[in-house]
View 1 (tube, helix red, strand yellow):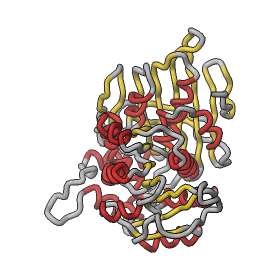
View 2: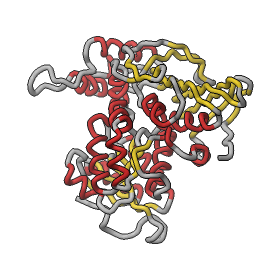
View 3: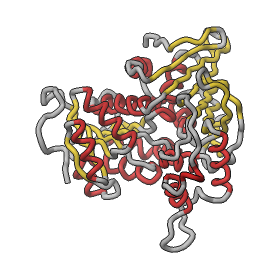
Length: 401
């Protein structure tokens, strides 16, 4: 077991300048966050994973410390993050891991960042004031919901809302490629489309039925027209919590491939989103399905060709500007994981450097979203467009804050 009080300075700055960050989880996105943090300087990074070989591979590639920890082991986790400035939780699914890790971080006085994309976690920590009160008493900053959707979607919502006198409605629409070899994402999308995700409608959080609210969206090229439906990402909860005056906030998404959306609908219909084992000792329907989809035998049934277009997320913000109705649009495209990993790494820098207030926050609570977006756009892999009802589409230009 490794904890972050051990060892010497490895990040290229002076001892006083260095920020100690612990990364939990060395999977697809966790690795990307580690590479960004390690390559930025000023960070003493420790990468941990339940699988020591995965942690070792990332640690050796980055030149940073590594070790093994299971986030379900609270005592081991407490030891692992001792002395850190911040912990980044990249271990999903978040509805199973996030709340326990947040609890340990607050109790340990360590700032916390995650890529939570499960609405249950957002509802727990953003709607129950006791979490915010505990974090404030401990002088700990907790930032949940980083990544693309949620994450960049919420930051764009906040940025656009700051340009309006009054914000009334925010609509988030996104689409992405089904990928059988990324079972965690499929598991997540099955869950959030099973009818329990909240939408904020006329000042109330409502739960829509599975795959309800079909809508065609003409995303900017090269994506084009895609059908989306209500989905349970955390954004409506965070928008209702942090952006004043909003009466409605909705999120709709889908896979690009129609076959993948049909698969999703059928698996929801036949109960494969359940985590309850049908018999003692058997896997849950969800665990069985996800394992089968990602297996070699599952290839002949679940392989669906990907489209050569990037992930797309559009944020539409309606309100008033200069006393007149106004609608602002932002759309981000990402061909890689970089929008997610760069976004989360930048948040980790801010949090470790104590640049945010204590308490429980989300990107929608950011005090200076323009500054953050300007830094994010330094990554050439991230592309964001903007337009309005009376303006042509162009690359995002950040207004002074």
